[in-house]
Length: 167
Image (cartoon, rainbow, N blue to C red; front, side, top):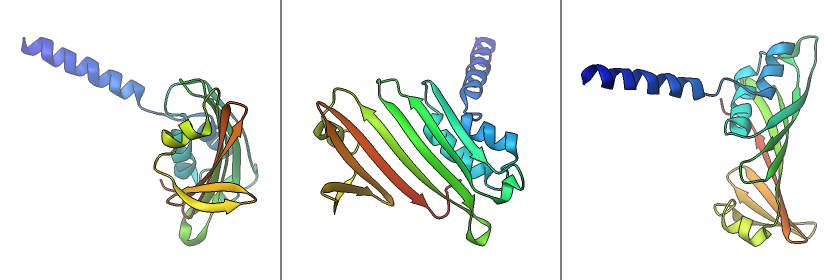
């Protein structure tokens, strides 16, 4: 019986290890071009955007000369399991005090869902923060969001500035 339990524990721990996030399109390209100065920050954003199941890919750009000391940018596209699509622009660059600063702007489509439904579920922790050009702005910490109703569907635009980027 003990041998069976030990075998089951070993098998389950190897599956857990196999499922651990090892990088996605953003961090893979950062490695390729030598954008190593902010690699852990790029990896953290990549994990946030791409760890869960779903098709994903990215267009990325970084300077080939001194890639670790310059801005890294990418457009990440991801299909979520519920049918929504996320489009995220990512910018990460060396900042003050040997840290890396960045921005993340994410546009998420919610087909056949009203913005009221999206606001009450996905963005329920966001608070009213005012208006900009006639659009309501919601806020959660340093993240701001706008919800745009489009004929029975909703598009959420979320923006976050990170000084420094969390690792």
